[in-house]
Length: 248
Ligand code: IPD
Ligand code: CA
Ligand code: CA
Ligand code: CA
Image 1 (tube, protein in one colour):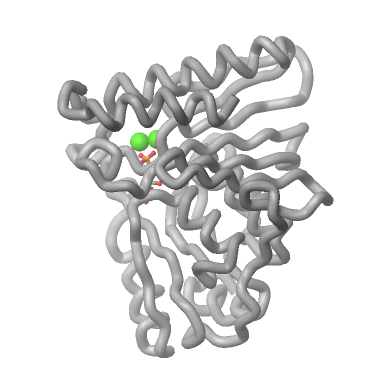
Image 2 (image 1 turned 60 degrees about the vertical axis):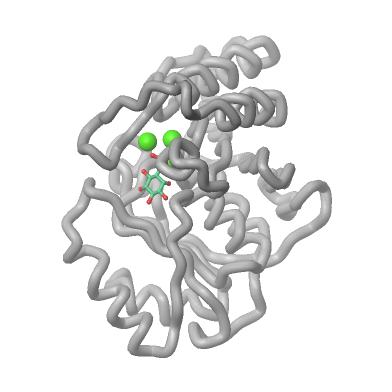
C-alpha cells in the first residue's frame, strides 16, 4: 500500500512544475494536490483491507472507525522539499490501537527505502534489522532538528545553544519522519523539534523505540489532537539531550 502510494507521489514529484501551490496557516506552510490525492489513495487502499478502522491525516482530518484502530497518515512529509525539487520527503503511516502505537512505516520513494516497525518485533529497513547508534556523547554524531512557524524561535534556540556548546552538530533536512527514520537506522543520533503533529512523528517513534532508542512521551497531554514537542534519540545520549531541551 505505502509503496503503491509512493509511486504516485514520485510521479507527482517528477511533474511538480505543473502543481498549483497553496498556502495554509502561514506562507511557509504549503500544500498541493499531490499531498491531498496521495492521502486519499492511502486511505482508500487501507480501507479496502481494514474497513472498520479510523483515520487521521494531515490533509483530510479525522474519520472515526467502529473499532479502536487508527491510521495516522502524512502523505508527503517534507512538502517544501517536494515542491522545490529536493529529495528529502517521504510518506509516513502509523497504526494506533487505543492509546498505543503498534506499527510504523516510512517510505522514501526516491531511494526505495522502507523503514518499518511492529511492536515487539524490532525495526527494519527493507527487511533488514536496524538499530540506533551506539553513542554516549553528543560529540559522537549528528542530531536532526526541526522547527516551524507554529512556535516562536525562543523555543528552539536554547536547545541549539546547548547542543553546539557541548560540541554537538545538527542538520535539518525538511522531513521530520525521514530524520526520525535515520535515528532508527543509526545515521543520526537523535531528533528534536519543539512542536510537531502526530502524523509527522508517530511512525518515527515506534521505529526508534523498536530500534533500541528512546522517545519523549509525545502522546501525553493531548499530543494526538494538539501536537507536542518530540525528542527521540539513541539511548546513550537521551539523558543529556533531555537536559539540553529542558525536558528533564
Ligand atoms: C513538516 C516537516 C518538517 C517539520 C515541520 C512539519 P510537512 O511537515 O516534517 O520537517 O519541521 O514541523 O510540519 O508540512 O512537510 O508535512
Ligand atoms: Ca504540511
Ligand atoms: Ca509532515
Ligand atoms: Ca505533509
